[in-house]
Image (cartoon, rainbow, N blue to C red; front, side, top):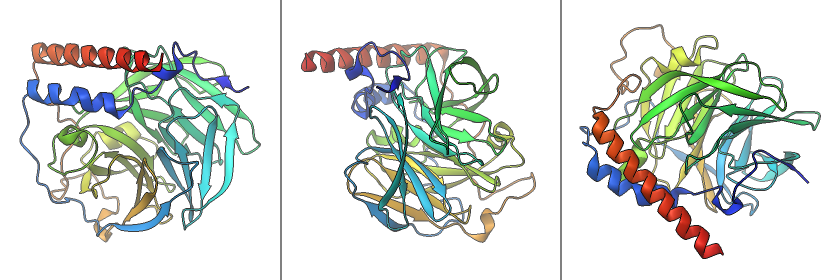
Length: 353
């Protein structure tokens, strides 16, 4: 029997999925002041998106995490009773499956370490009631480890894992208002340990006007996936509608995210939750939930090469832009969202009883 990543109070309540978020979003958008829409055109020099292949394997109905591994790809589901990562070839066919004897609570993202270790971010928490989240490692020798993590400021839902070249993990939270926090563990990951985390940065996402996703325009603000290129030169985050790419120097992920990225509007997809870099470390690979699930390739232009610090007029500013929401308004929004989520969670549980 796989070891549980966290003792669940109610297994059915593990994943209050996007339906709950969608229900809460209209209240948020009615109560919060809407920022000016950004230019809807892609501000990064990326080419037109193309479909690389389609995932049809019934074992991957809810793809949430994606990572590049040379010409292959690694994919994982949002859910399941065992930590599993599927190896996909260039045609999206499943070959090998790597797994560990850990029962994840709500896995959301995936990263590949330099030593071949797969890291699964068991960090989903739509109801924001988990005391700990977890990082699960699947090692090349078949062993697995689990490290629990705690936030310094209460529970958060996080769907993006960024693994720095030196192996340091960063979690980026998914926030309805776009004020995503970036958190780093306070020490080395150790099997069975519980570590605190430090908030190292806050990103303020603004509306872009790019359509897509399951929750209306709020999806433009919600971070759903992240990736670091295998050569350590770039870091990327995505929302339901847009991707942001920063140059990375060394392993200073927080420093990179504090700079100004380039933005690219992504093709409309029902629930795009995964992003990775392709084998050339520059093109973007995108995927999401549902079957068949297309893996989309967004080719990068020459101008996306890392550059020295300085003005980048072609980039859409993201980092450091905190939306102008008063504490009173934020409190009202938080109360409404919490009330709706609790109500919906209770309704879902009653239906299952």
